Amino acid sequence: MARRPTPPRRRGLIGRLFRWAVTLLLVFGLIGPVAVVAIYRFATPPMTWLMVERMVQGHGFDRRWVPLGSISPQLVRSVIGAEDSRFCEHHGFDWGAIQKAAAANERGKTLRGGSTISQQTAKNVFLWPHRDWMRKGLETWFTVLIEGIWGKPRIMEVYLNSIEWGPGVYGAEAAAQANFHVAAARLSAPQAARLAAIIPRPLAWKAARPGPYVQKRGGHIATAAGTVQRDGLADCVLR
Image 1 (cartoon, rainbow, N blue to C red):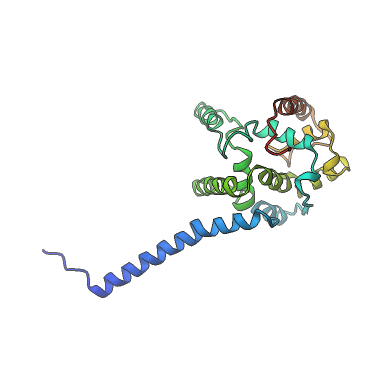
Image 2 (cartoon, rainbow, N blue to C red):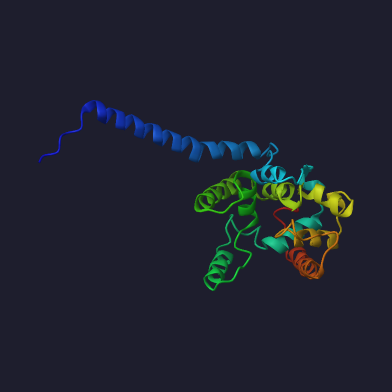
């Protein structure tokens, strides 16, 4: 039996729906993110999804935004040494670290290091905390955008002012005050190393009263921070 041709009116409706779908995709998938990232190049990003979620859980909220120049270089070196030693070299993605992390996952092990500081910043500022394939895809897109629009110093500034450093504690200034009662600009090398040490588990580990594991990890990070300084691995940020 021959197929009946689609009526012209219906074809017109399908065409309009398709154009609307493409328009929405361009606005929300391409133009919207570009505009938001461009605004945050200069404006302070507001509360993140994680901050709101933690407040609902009853953790409170303490975040004190400070410019990068008011954060100790010791903390910059420590987080680069702990989280992303190639931060100044890559363009958002450390493919070698990603491959190592994937190989470890295949063996049933967990290996930190696949996610760069740029990726963590994109995830923390723009996306929800729970892992899924959609978030990973958007994380990739936002990482490309912040690398291109913000540059390394702004990425580091936003990162250090946004990450979680304890129950209801966000950013370097609040973390320095809560743990050591000093401004972020006055953090010593050991204090900075301990703050960097608790980034993977900020609700469980304590920088001010570290257990044996955090103390040991902080020592390794202090050594790594020395390497970062010696080899100029933070030169894209600390000018």
